[in-house]
Length: 403
Ligand code: GLN
Image (cartoon, rainbow, N blue to C red; front, top):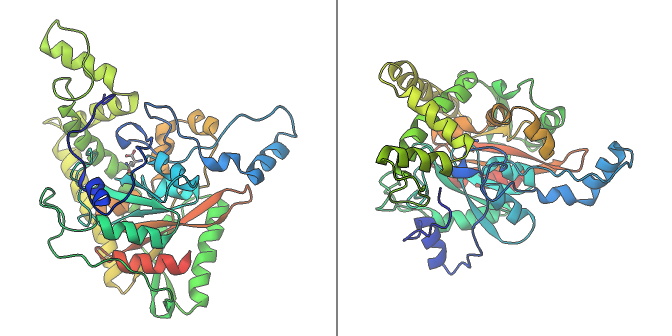
C-alpha cells in the first residue's frame, strides 16, 4: 500500500535521533503494517535470522539430518520488528527502532539475542508512527545491551505537543548504575505464565534466572495475574477493531497505492485495498468491522475494553502488593525454522506466541527482553522483565544487573 511513499515529515523519534547527531542507516523490514510475530509477512519478503548461519546451529542441524543434503532452511527472527532485531544482531548498527503493540520489539529481540525495550505508554511520542492500535502502540528500541537501550530511550523520551498522550513532566536522562544491590528487590513470578506450551528449555532458564535473584538476596515470590487467559482474545478484538478504523485512511486517494479501476469511487476503494493490503491486514480489517457492527459492538468491543481494564488491574494489584519487577519468559520457545513457522497455521501460532507480551501493552507498562543463554541448539533465549508504569529506569537497572 505504501510502496514508493515518501513521508513529508519525520516521526518525532526519528527527528530526536537526528537532532542528537545519530546516523540513520536505513529502514528495516517488518511484517506489513506491523501485524505479525514472525517478520514473514512483509512486502519485501521474510526476514532471516542471522543466527541461522551460526556455526553451532548449522552443525546441530547437520547432525539432525544425518549429514544428508545441505539444509537450506533458515530461522525466523520473530516479529513484527524482525528487520530491526536482525540488523542489530548482525552488528550492522548500534541500535534500531521498532514499534511494540503486542510484543514486536521484545519477541524478535528474544529470537535474535538482543535487548528489546518497550517503554511505558506515554513516555515516547507516537507522532509519525503508523498506528496499529493507538491505545497500545509504543516506539521501542533494539540494542545489543541494556545500557544502549537506556541511552537511546533518554533521547526518545519526553513530552511531544504532537502526541497528547505523552507525559507532561520533564524526563531525566536514563543513566544506569554499574553496581546494583538487588537484595532489597521483590521479583514476582506470574504463575499463569507457566503454560503447557512453554518449551522445557525456556522454562528451566526462567527458573534458573529466578534462583539467581534469590541467591543474591532478592525476594522471589509467586504472583497471580488471574485474567491472563483472556488476554489473547481480548487483544484480538481490540486490535482488529482499531485496525479496521485506522486502515480506513488507506483509500487510494491520499496515500501510496491506487488501482487502475475508474468504474466508480467505491470500486476504486475496493480494488485499491484488495491489491494494496496482504491477507493478514485484510483479515484484520474484516474482523474488526465485524466487532464494530452496531449489533456486535457492546458484546465484543465494549466487553473487550472491560476485560482489558481487568487485565491492567491484575498488574496494579501485584505491584501494589510490593512487587518491584515481574520476571517472565518473552516467547514460548527459541526461534523456529521458517518452514515450521509457515507449516502450522501461522496466525494462530503468532497469537499464541504473544501470550507473555500482549498484556503488558494493554496495561501500558514498560517491559524489556534480555538475552539469557543459548539453547541446546545454540540459539538465543530471552527473558522478560515487566516494571511499574513510568518506572522504566528501575526496570532497566534490574535488566542491566541481570544481563
Ligand atoms: N504480534 C502482534 C500482532 O500481530 C503484535 C504486533 C506488534 O507489536 N506490532 O498484533
